[in-house]
Image (tube, rainbow, N blue to C red; front, side, top):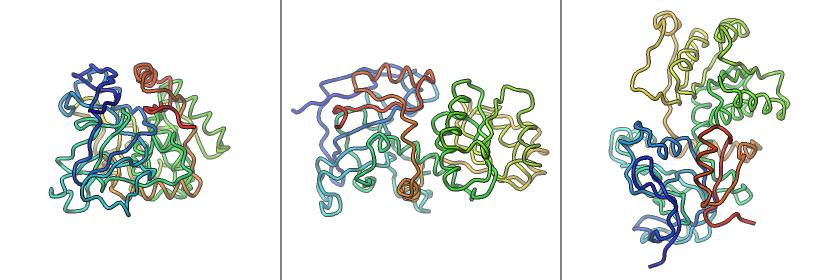
Length: 359
């Protein structure tokens, strides 16, 4: 039996590098991909920390990792090699959907009620090889750096969130400037938002936001707001004469959720991606801040299959660049250090190379 190495979750909060994992064989309708690069996600941090919120959906023992890119290595029975030739540079949607639930029948596959996720309850991509359904494979442009190919999953979340409603020539608030919030800011700027407010409470996040605005040369259309200061909502409302057109809530914190709603103008849109730690969130001044303003709230989960992938790759081909978000690159053997640094907020995105860094 041919073996490979990978990061396996053995129990909630317990993981280890294994060098004796069996090389996966693609089942009928699947392809095997040699992983070129994979990205560490906030979800991975929660899983590896034994966060109780994840314990109900993880299925140890399982190989972790759901952000990746690589090259097709082997085809399962029934897969057309003309459509997916061996060696093709690809990523993949890691949500394996049922196809028969009401959401799937409506074409909303990203909201499948019985979805399985590779890297969470099916073996994933923190390994030398991973198998996925052929229908989930997304061919990538040959010139796309593997560092970027490895983080298309979270970038897709950001694209889905940011483009949920039209934002060109509109004012936008991004509440929570972690990696996905940073990606939302990049997308909003690239598609022509009129003004972007970047809101956070962490010193490192705020400094990254300021540096991004400086690097992009968009200081005149970006305002960075420290939400620890008094009345951050009032600042946004005053600057926009009534509130932003669209608020993107990425933090998942109850304060952030309420701030996003409160800083949005009448008849505006609030798009929610962030997940709160608890089951319940209290909406403050519900009648005033929501009902009487006639807001529309949108819930975003994952990426639309495959509309978001098409939008994302189109933006990249037009020149949108997110490679600067990758702040650390390391081998799979250094996964423990990578998850620790990412979890502490010391890195924007960490990319791993299970098969060694490509030359």
